[in-house]
Image 1 (cartoon, rainbow, N blue to C red):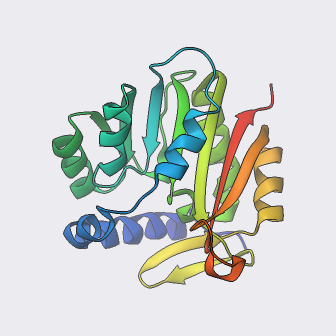
Image 2: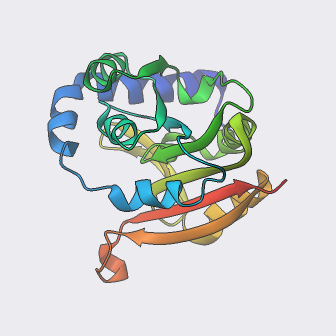
Length: 209
């Protein structure tokens, strides 16, 4: 049964409340995470000469905004959690937009790359085609979308205070292809471990036309 508008509003509100309530501990717990593999995966697929305009979708406290800026790129953050937006602005000095994933308002053709690290799994399956279409429209020709999500068996629901949808590779490919993207690469994280110890599925996509 499809989620109702009221249920979608509840999902968004509870997810954002979780992150607002745990903003300080989240920042401390993720501050030293090494996501250089993910940042490099996006940057190597961007066309044209740098610096690039990059949207850090679900930027959280701003860790990766600092990295993109240090690499010389023009980064803009986006997050729905008010506390994360304030933290990211202070930490990075970047422009940071406060927007709910389920109510995005993105300028068309604005970005060379969109970096969606550990965020799109919060979008309920029924809303994902619409959200992916909005991301596609925000990319310039030759742009690319990076995604990293906790993988699963195509189930969704509440998990420790957050709503998430957990896709396997086949389902994720089908969703992105239907949304008008073509796959550039995918890999599992953390690198160098047996597959059962790699809970994250990372992938890079370009608009198909």
